[in-house]
Length: 74
Image (cartoon, rainbow, N blue to C red; front, side, top):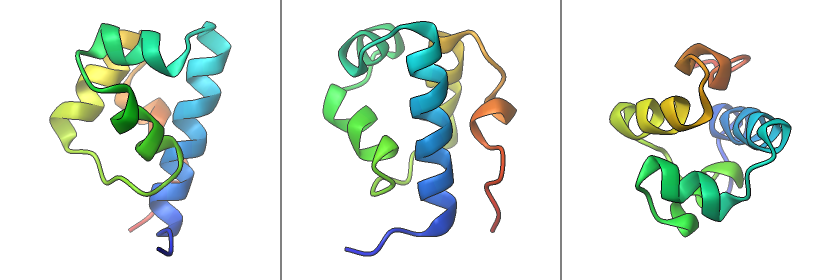
C-alpha cells in the first residue's frame, strides 16, 4: 500500500510529539480512548484519521491540532 505524502507527514508529526511527551503508543491510545493499532496506523501513514480522532489525540497530547498538521498539504 502506498502512503499519501500528507498522511506520512501527519504520522511523522504525531510520532515526534508523542515521543517528546514521553508517551508510548499504548499510553496515547488510552488517553485518547482509541485503539493502539489505530495510533500505529496513523504514525505509519496508512490510516486517515477523522477530525474527531485528531481532536482526541491532540487533547491527549496537550497540543493544538495544527501542531499535528504541519507540512500536511492536500
